[in-house]
Image (cartoon, rainbow, N blue to C red; front, side):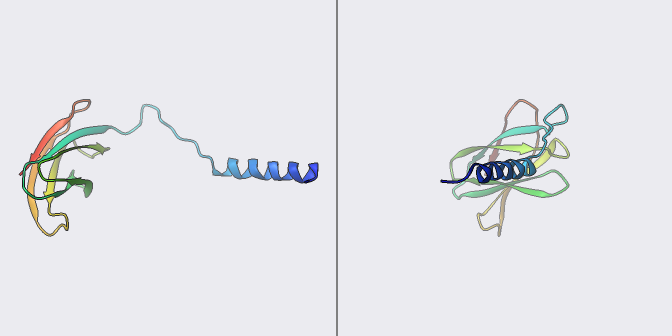
Length: 112
């Protein structure tokens, strides 16, 4: 059995640690915009898909041959972006398609 004083001290320590680990998060009107795209791989090999908005290239994921995957693009600098499909090892670009992102409407992209 533990003594009441030890229990109280452990409870206070636990509360202090929990308070120190918490943080405030603002999800008001300044929250980032997210766009949805459906990427169809019309080719015969799997593609590593990425997007670029002029500032940097970002990976979305793998789309298997003949399949469609949905991806989310969050907080692009511009709404005109380029979707690129490359070999899974990144050694060769197979297809690159410029698109315009539309808020609230998924954009369909086919890579061949």
